[in-house]
Image (cartoon, rainbow over all chains, first blue to last red; front, side):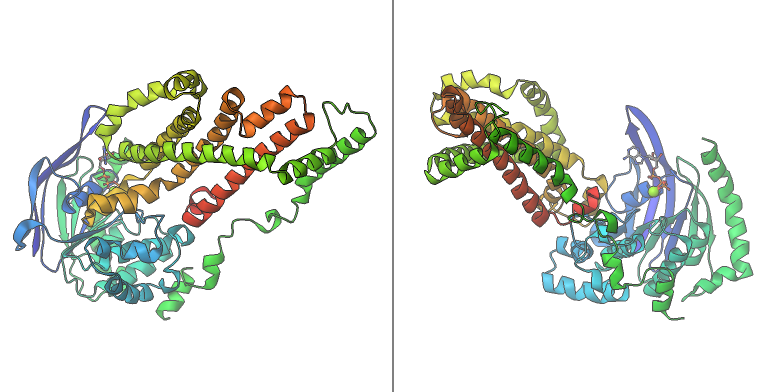
Length: 255
Length: 283
Ligand SMILES: Nc1ncnc2c1ncn2[C@@H]1O[C@H](COP(=O)(O)OP(=O)(O)OP(=O)(O)O)[C@@H](O)[C@H]1O
Ligand SMILES: [Mg+2]
């Protein structure tokens, strides 16, 4: 299955005024492709993911899930700031998606426990989110999506609120967890390093209203490790992307 | 370096300490250790009162010695007179509470969740809310008679509004992302209700119930002053009419204990039902 966005536009209505968030955004994500969407704050990245998750309808354009009869694949979204339910334990949070899909309790827990184990959360399954560190919450948020084995995986800056070291550890874990990217992944970030480290392709959006400004292919072979960040090719690509992003970021900063 | 080491380095390893790290009190403010300080003043005042009353420096008519009040309390409890009044007041509070809180909760959650329902009912409820509850009592007595019904209805009305208003606020306080998460995994409305709307609004619902029960206690005593031969309010009123000062003190004491008891039961229920809410308020 492929994801194809055709000229998506969406405007919010804020106190009677139109606020254009996305304008004519088109791109494709191939079967096994990990696409990073990079853009300055407020350019519509979250909005784009919500459209892909079916939470918002674009006013113009459409999303096609090519090769998916019914055009409504099982998506799973990792929300910015984790979005865990404070009233559910870690286990209840992680298995929530499965529960909503009618999976029985035993199977839910059977699928969740190995993942919780690997993420170092197995001793916190009965804890509530406020009893976890930020990094642990973020992982629980990732597991909630991973455990449903979605056809399309959507991630919204899952590591944005972490300190630099924790971020590196989790990026490394994510790289190993994904292995060979078995499904289309759309990963939103405003961190160039992260986009290059994780992505097969990077789509750069302009400042609001977000439009596609450019695309970069990342050719580092998988499985990757954090070591790629220290190669000259990485630095070159980063320079290229930054030149394109710079104008958008500056224009946001000026506002 | 293996993965665990790296995790430990990043401060993420799952050591047992991590779960216990967030103790609600720093060492020096642990309750119990210095709480006798808070008792010092009330206890000394009571002692002073007792001594001065016995010495005859206080007029017994207004300030009977605390020991006399306690003796009266014990006597009235043993005779069954006080338990009867207390039981009847509790029954009125209980019935009125159920009659008001359940519809308040159901309507409040619906209004909080479904915007058109809220827009439809909000003006009416805001308008009603401004009428002081006790001002309705004469009308209620005309409609429901002077018996139990009018008393229970006024308590129910008193309880209804705070429950409703807090339930609406409780739902609206739930962050939009929680609804989005539920919808993104295909949750049906009933699941959204049971897994998001209801648990998410419970902290404010509980705050509403606390307000409601306080109000119910106030109302029950008020209406028993006016139109009852039984109940804690009637007991107090009769004590004043016959100028039995010790009985007045006993009545006040019991009413205060009742209020404290209700609050304690609610705190326990909240602790039991909402283990997660402690993370919200950082008590
Ligand atoms: N529900 C909403 N109602 C009105 N305006 C909104 C809403 N959500 C987002 N916006 C506006 O739309 C624009 C894009 O928002 P969006 O959250 O998609 O940006 P973003 O790229 O994810 O930003 P960030 O990097 O800060 O997360 C912003 O200007 C934002 O203020
Ligand atoms: Mg965002």
